[in-house]
Length: 614
Image 1 (tube, rainbow, N blue to C red):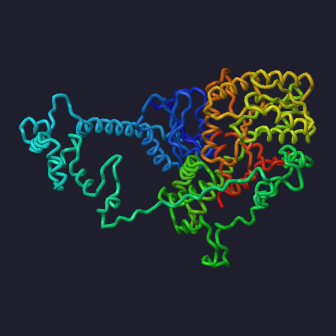
Image 2: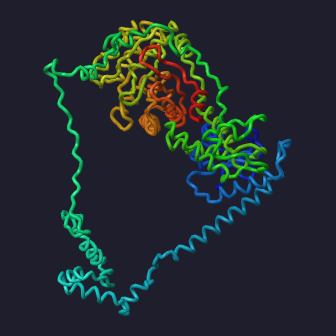
Image 3: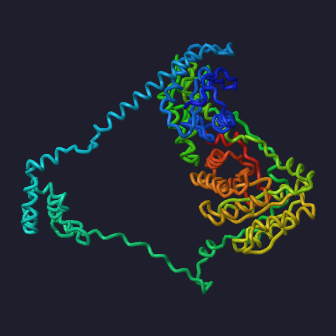
């Protein structure tokens, strides 16, 4: 049964709702749909589930109207899509932007609903009648083959029997003579295809373990030449014992040390740990030069303008009434490929293009306006909405709020192995130090050898206290004791380092869920590499899924923010940031861009969007 049908504008004004249904919905499915789907550029999806409800929607982009139907998830209502389509058509004919009430639409909707239900029932009956005609044999029904067998009409069976009775001798004769008759073709049912065997034997192919090429038998075009495979280049042994025997070039290749500094990783970090963190520096971004796809000037010939990749997809359309799906597909296909070359996950690129298509279909296009420019503008707006945080997370403000409550602000760093959690934890600690915030580190990676020593080195270099209990301890208990110690000594922030774990590691994910549920941190930061593509979607979605499934409290904690590492190594392959934000809804709060403590900065949304679309 249909629970509700609403018509509202993109600005949020409800124009009409079905009074005949009038069921009170549990929770707020419409608000959740707008917040989690329509505003997050997921409007290209087929449906949206909220509790016991399924929601479907359609747009009238030219009028700026949204039509939403709500029904029980367990019901399979076949007429919902059809109903939304005809309701959109009928309502758009009577829509007036100056009107606020449409009570006269009630009777029209009643008739449309009856028609849609009747069409669905007719379609259902048609499918049921057509089922027996699809080769499904009813009880007592005799097939033609069985009738032929009973009447002795199938003559090939006699041929099969003769082949079987003669045994292997007849098969060999057929192979030698190259026979191909109906008996050979029917031997598949016996398990031997004599015609294929004859062809293979004539080519000199003997089967498994035998000789596979006729050339080696000397029977193929008289050629007996054997091509020898090229010899592999052998690796030369390196001389380690005698230093004089090793060439000077080899010594230079093995020497990776910096001539101006020491060889240790921590010392390289410490050498650049003075100065202002890049987090506090405003990055200047200019968009004046980003006009490859802008409209040509009046004094410039179109032929003389350099065409970019996007402007070559479609040229201008004159007098186009409304955009159709077929008009948008070529431009969206090119855009999807461009996003994927920038390391955006294929699934995310496809969903983004579907969302842009849903927002543009049916929209009027002004004369002499390129479809490529329209699609690119819509995609740019969509990317900015996705990468801009839905909720503001101001760490410094939250730290001072926690300080007024006389408790430390707790940040937990989580992520997979080898992404740089400990190093970037130290960068965050350095940034907090510059803002006169007292920090304490908690060494809760009790699993990986050397993790405690690594964090202890960072703490010594930054002159920050560290709480540690060694290895093979429960990380949840260690974090709890660290927070208690920070409360006693008046530390403002506790940065909790955890073990790297793959998203499919059940024991370690269970331990992480226990740590978060027991200590209730203020911020859960996922540390991920900017180098990953499709794997970013899998990592974040499974981390959130595991944290949700293994949660023991009513208030499930998921990933709150993202710290993107190794951002200086990817050039223009910035798509991982978009994939991570899209799949989790969490903002990118920090970007690691180097090896020193100062190399931590904010994400420049405009620069990312420009890089993705250029």
